[in-house]
Length: 188
Image (tube, rainbow, N blue to C red; front, side, top):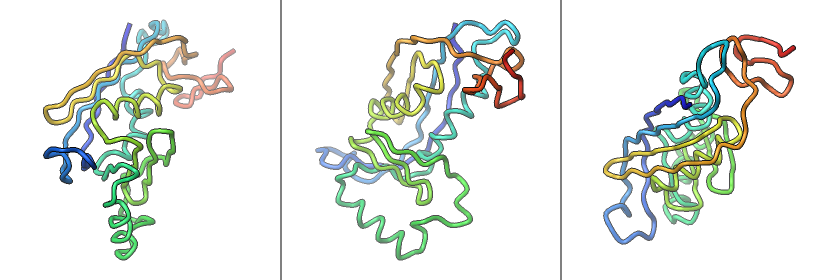
């Protein structure tokens, strides 16, 4: 069975080198749907609490919300960083509260202090799905990810090859010591 949750993400990007309108800097409202598959945890009668899927995903994905997403070879990137440096906001400000955990993967690097994500490839709906899966595959049993942004939608299904050890009281994945990070339950 599956638990499904959705996240809204506002972002700006451009397709460097693209021969079309998307080469101009522009913004989108995106809707990300994550489907998690596993057995139903008997104590809580659910696969995985949707609010916990959202918390787990949002901790990393909020770096994309209200962020500028540019390809690593985009010539506009140094200019943006230079402006941020001159304005004193490159390393963040106390008012920048939308920060997620910094991350660096083969596909993307998040710079939460300046609300910037640098990607290896252009940030298409297909590319975003690849990034999301890479960031969350070890945290959730992701069966399917769908991302809709403007008139563009992509979806990919994944093979779920493991069952997560979850808390019988709240359904959250137990940590490496068998302890629930949400309610403190300890596996016996």
